[in-house]
Length: 447
Image (cartoon, rainbow, N blue to C red; front, side, top):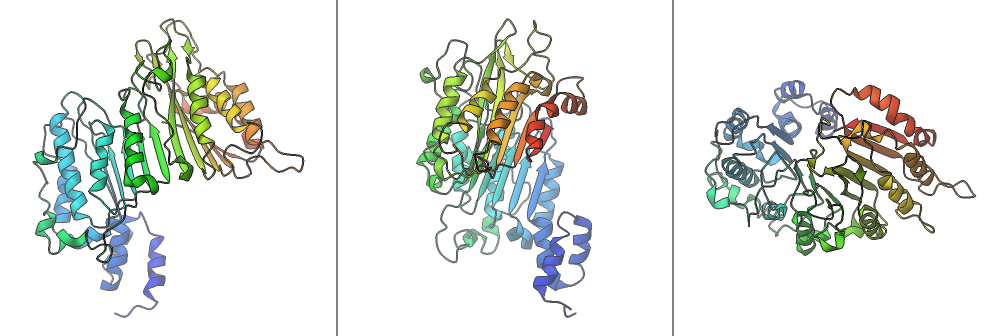
C-alpha cells in the first residue's frame, strides 16, 4: 500500500507517540514502510531492572526476556541507542554478581553497533577508573553514567576473562557481518572518541568511596582521549568518613589527603557537578572543618569555566559514627533539630558575587543537592536570601548579573515520618520565595 504522505512527515507524526509502546506496536503492523520508524521508537532506549536479591542466582527473568526477544530479532540491534541496566545485588556476595554483570554488559556492547548511551546502576566494583576500559569497548558511546555503585576492594581491571553468562544472546561473531559493524560504522574509517557526558552519582551517602577513588578517576580522564570531547562531568560520590578532602576528620587539612579537584579540561564543560562534605561531631554538632578552604579551592578553578551553563553542588554529612542515612536514624543525639551550617550556601554566594565580572557568565541552571533530611534546612533562610541577592543582582541599567540564570533546584532526603509536602511548603519554599519573586523557576524534590 503506497503511503499517502512522504515518509518524513509520517515519521514526524509517529515521533509524538514516543513512549506509547502499545500504539507504536500497532502502527508497526500497518505496513512495512512504517516498520523502521516504529522500531526506532520502540527500541531506541532499553531499560532493565534486575530484581534478583542473590547475585549467585544466575536466573534473571528480566534479562532472559530481553535475550529471547533479541535472539530472534537481530534486525533491531542497530536501533538501540540507549541501554540502562539497574542491578539489585547483595553487598555481602558481590563476586558472582560482578562477573555476570560484566559479561552481559560487554556482550551488549558488541551486539549494539549504534549504542550512544550506557547507564549502569547497582553494580559492585572499584576502582572507578577501571570503568574507562569499558568505555574503550564502545567507540560510539556519547554518554556513560554510573548510579549507586558500591565500591569494595581495589581491582586492576574488568575481569573480562571470566565471563560465564551471555543469557542466550548470539555473540557478535555469530552474526553476519556483526564483527565488522563497529569497525565500519564510520564509513570504513576508524571512529574517533565521542564521549560527551560522564557521571558517577550515588544517591545514598552510605555508598562512599575510598579517599583516592575520585582523584584517580579525574587523573585518568585527563590522560584519556576523552579529555578533549567531554562536555558534561558529574562526580557526586562521598568519600569515607575522615579519609579525604571530601570527608575530612575534624582536624584534617585537605592538602594532606587525596582530594577531588576540578579537571584541567573543565573550561570546555557546559555542565559540572561535585560533592562537599560536612562532619557531624560525636557531641551532635554539625561542623565543617576545612570545608571553607576546600570550597574556595574548587571555586577558584571553576571561575575559569566561562561556558558553564549548569552547575550541580552536593553537600553530604558524615558522622563520627557513620554516615547520615535517608531515614534520619543517625541524626545527632543531643540536638532535637539538627541543621546544616550556612558555610555551603555562604561560600557559593561569595563565589558568584565576587567583585568584577560574573564568575560563571553563561550559568543557566543551579542545582543544590543536600544529602541530608530536607528538614535539616530549617535554619537556612538567611543563607538562601544572600544567594538570591547575588543571583538576582542588577546593575544601574537594570541588567542582571546572571541574565541567563533561570532555574534553581533544591534536592534533599526525607527523614523518617516526615511529610514531604508539609516540609516543602512550610519550611523550604518560604526560604526560596525571593528566587520566585525574581522570576526564577524553583524546584524542590526529595532523593
